Length: 373
Ligand code: NAD
Ligand code: GLY
Image (tube, rainbow, N blue to C red):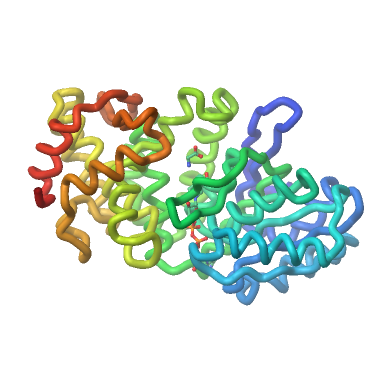
């Protein structure tokens, strides 16, 4: 381990693994990954942009450790997380004659992590993989926990598998090239952890948001490590989302409804939708007298201070029809049997799953939020 790296274990018995967080990990990737590559071959599935910016360093590190490291570049963007993207990737893996003693390394953001992870889950009935996340969102969320998936025209992440990585290397240095807007989108998932289960972390973020977004090393390392610790703890307790893991969906039902309306992609990034969704979840909780109104206002201030949308009126897209948003919420895969299920809050740092949410109350709330009938 590098002196500066922090290690967060994900305690899943035979499928346990470490998440390493720190600077300089890309240069040490060969030594760190080699113990997991029995046949000393790693197929690097890389986001094209990330390959251009950081690929040479990763390949050199793998080769220094005596690992062959053929790279498969994947076009950036959500469209790669599709049946077509999966078919193309699987074919390239087969052409490399990869077998079960080999390893896949997902090198990019959540798109590449989800796609390569799902390919690893089904390639020759399952092959090991490691995650090398390069966006803030992927480092604090998608690379940890083993959810892998592709989208279909009927919705996002509907076809997938739980497949845990063998190792996660979150190199904070690679975030230097990440666009600021993507940093903010990742930050939304960080705030989410404070909101759902750690008031002290939320307070720390209120004070340190600017430092985290400016990539100040100490602040960034703490924000990523605390987020990963919280996710690891929840995943270890509830790997397949039978209960507590659903809390990680705070802000996601409102957020997904907006993403579905706007169209998944550049117009509204996932993290931006989650930020607005968290603000709405707190305002809805306050409207239902479940949480103090002051908490909802405080959440809104923290989200807005990070340059993230906290109100429907902050979005260029719109207006949004309340009934369409409610219909999307009913179709969310977190919904059960069509009943409306939301993660709501009792206060900052205490979220809970609310089943059977009244559609009429939700409609009134959305109209008050500025949605159209
Ligand atoms: P992304 O993978 O699309 O990456 C965002 C953009 O940043 C891309 O254009 C990419 O080319 C670029 N990029 C990546 N790293 C870079 C770097 N270091 N420097 C410069 N540019 C870089 O987006 P994302 O936000 O990382 O992930 C979103 C995806 O993650 C969605 O598909 C979502 O469904 C999924 N997700 C999955 C989970 C999970 O648990 N599996 C959780 C949350 C989100
Ligand atoms: N991103 C939600 C989860 O991993 O469960």
